[in-house]
Image (cartoon, rainbow, N blue to C red):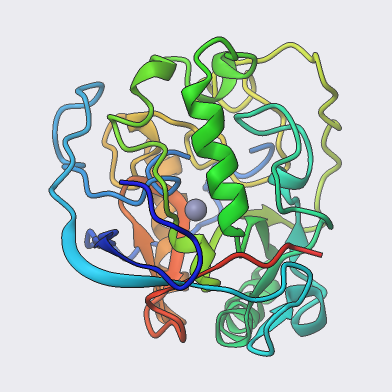
Length: 300
Ligand SMILES: [Zn+2]
């Protein structure tokens, strides 16, 4: 269902489920080193099902939400630049560049900044304070996402002729099924400003190759030494891997990768975030200040 973007009430509030995880630590033996989707469409899936089976989506809860209209170049007072709250957190803003599932910059990302609600940014600062003594840092891939960016995802998904980035980001999903299977939807929790996509980076952070348009692509679920050479901890898949292997509790990934996911999940939970079971990298502040408001201002 398509919603008008200004002061309009619609129905269909995305569900954000939580799957309990084991409390594990990232030990010395953890697989450190080099190393979208349902959060694009926030939907519920049966993560315990056999892998590679199509994700089953529950019917969305009928609840009201609203789009808030601000001037597109005006950041509301409740939002901050994460750099100003914690400059030590690594940033790799994927939708401001071309290394993402569209293969180009996404609408609404004018600057390579991580914008979040003040509450979410401060909670991330607490997570980072816990990580730094362990020679680890957070790395954010996406933060607040303007509604025009989500609209851009939707328009891209409808253009079946453009499969430029399929090999890396959705190698086992037909583009025609991205909507049906819940990987792309018309709203995202990121537009509420308290949801973030992130991973862990061992410190000192290793250099990583700069993705250039046209670079050879490798499937995001391949082993860490084969897929894109990200400088993060090995979580079993790359970021924005539209695949069951990206489900946080997937049993098919290695033991070390599962430990790493659990470590990230637990440290985030200790500071008020909950994970989306379909994506190991996606977290929402439980006490988010705008639980029903979808913002459109640009990231600048
Ligand atoms: Zn996300």
